[in-house]
Length: 220
Image (cartoon, rainbow, N blue to C red; front, side, top):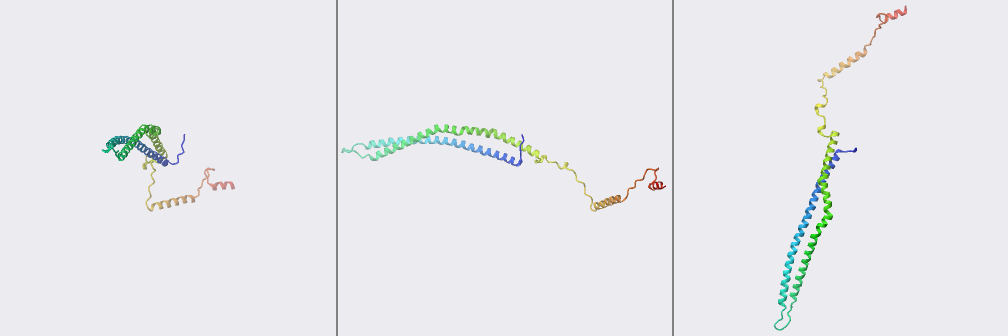
């Protein structure tokens, strides 16, 4: 299976972004877990607070009942006393007690419901995501880094794969100043003289005689 890789740098940058994404996601997961823990702690604090409020309201109701009972005695002349203030105080104390008891029940319901809601909406997906972050993503990052290194080695982009200066061909030493031009002129003059000189090939026929001898024999 072949891959059409156009830019090794883009592949390396994508690997770095993938690692940063994993780190950001891990931080987000840790933040969500912390908020869930804080939610449970807050519910525990609210339960303690409202239970204490219930006890305080019960004491207030007890005092309001006692005040009403003391006020409810007939006067010496047989008239019914005015207990309007005490009755209002008792009604307010009972209302506050009912409110505190309702809060206790609400907090108790949330303490029992919250784990189920978290389990249904968060625990399953977070467990799969945790497996991805702890196992799959590091393996993928390592494999991707290995492939990037192999591509860089293949393309000759890494410094340790470049040829060393000793392996490069050694350039010829420069000629002394002025002597190079003189040597070039002498070479050109020598080549011109060789081209101007005709080449004479002696004939080997007739016992080594020259060209003139052959012409004389033909006339005779």
